Image (cartoon, rainbow, N blue to C red; front, side, top):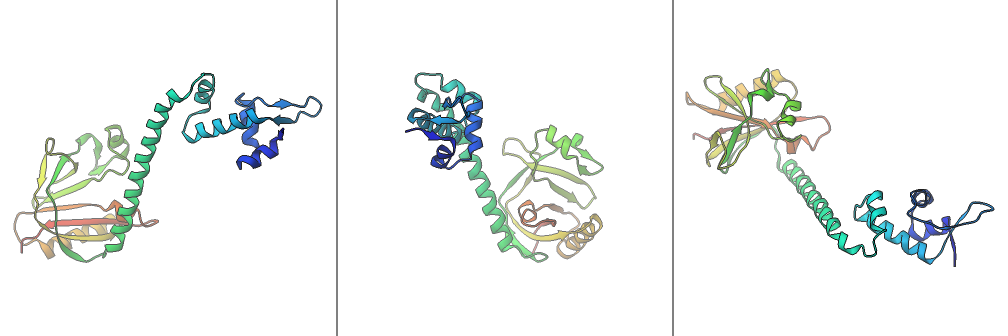
Length: 241
């Protein structure tokens, strides 16, 4: 039994132009009616199309499929396909975990309220001066230095007006350690730099009673991702009470 392009497309639930594309790429070689130019597909073509679609699901490119289909046995090449799929699974797992974190963070968020939380020890690495321009992180320069698009940049300021920007480091590579203690933590919505500075001053006045301190603040990316056009910043200081 021979199938038309339309019938083959219906059988596999794909558009007809996909089949025509595979014909143009010489992946499918159907019989052609010389009088009207119509293509007709036999059982071997059906099996070949199944192979092509399977390989595309495995993320092989058209050029890779052309090469594979020239081999007598193609299963030895599937190791690469398995590795590529593992990469995709890992990436999808990472995205899923990030989505879960964003949802959970927004569920428990109480904007503007201070609360006391115990934070685990954190190792921070100071970012290079080359990526800081006028006190702000130059994202393009940061990208060139290997930082991610959604890197968490943590600002630490002290009573002398000094402020440095860090990212998370490791136990083997760090410039500053934030000890495992109780912190007063507050997340605020930021609408302008002036408003942020005002909120920082208020937070210091309300929670810092010593002459020396370390004020920690950073964009709460997990919360900000949950809104179309809002920016949230989290403030932290050691609880001295």
